[in-house]
Image 1 (cartoon, rainbow, N blue to C red):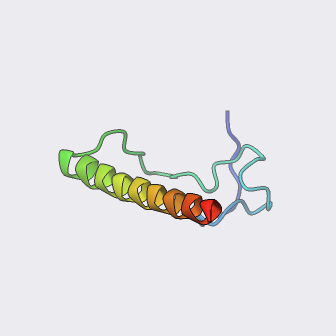
Image 2 (image 1 turned 45 degrees about the vertical axis):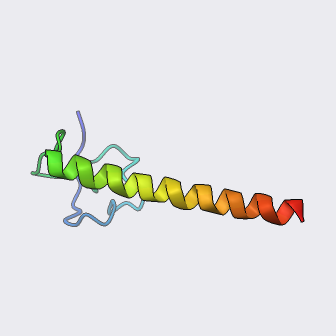
Length: 69
């Protein structure tokens, strides 16, 4: 069982241990954490991920071109 402390914010534990003391600070106290995404959310996340990958590929290609000089 987790212990309670007097922290009233989501900015970490009042004892200063980033929640490592076992209290519920910094967690979604009173709220549930979503497990599923809508189709639109999945698409947006995958498109953002694809853009990050394309940017990474471009950076690697540029780095290789510099090394070949």
